Length: 257
Image (cartoon, rainbow, N blue to C red; front, side, top):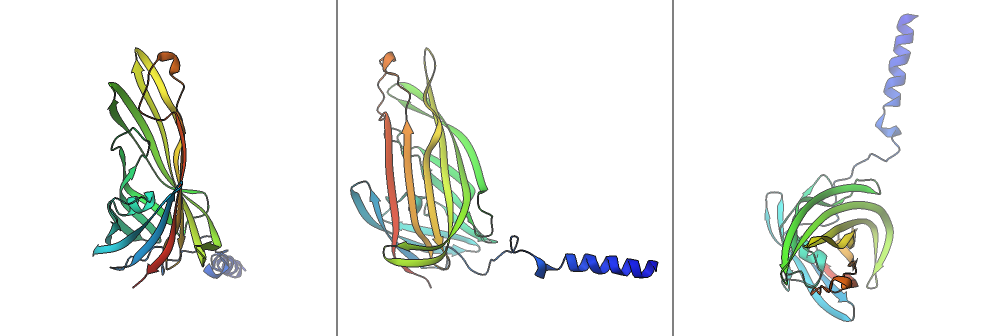
């Protein structure tokens, strides 16, 4: 009787752990890519910033082991995500796109302020929606008209819900994943006492859409910020009091080898 009971318990354990019973939430798929990185793969984009528009391209220019380098044309590009992808190296590992590069902070009046991304996960095709993929933080100082501006920032990437179908420039794409890159920043200075210029807020939010076996098909970048009102101090900085700028980057053509 004891032997029969032990056998029954063992059988139940085996059945309960059968992978075929899995609900699919933890199934990983790494046999395809949402940014194919063969040499000379290329993507062309229309980029719109307000009323201005331009065209630009992105090409896989070199491969070394599992590291890939992309080149933008023109360089520097107008598209913020094109700039990020072409500013360093990329790796594709276990369904993740991992990048090393820089992102332009993008606020007028802050000269040459670029933020570093190290081993930043741009997307994870196996992650559940609302999964935080990567976060990094840092500080920077700039002197603007004799004011020392202390800038603190945090860069975060998040995997969002997939999109079954998306139309971009008249082309329908299926099996699209959606990821987001967010830059939260705060700026302060000292005018006799510490003064906050920019309270902590999401200054840049980039929504990226990647189609299976195609690549980045759409990237929308929203720049929004509002500075504190310092008019009572008589301080004038070469930075607009507020801004709200949408950059739209849409795929128009691509070549996958």
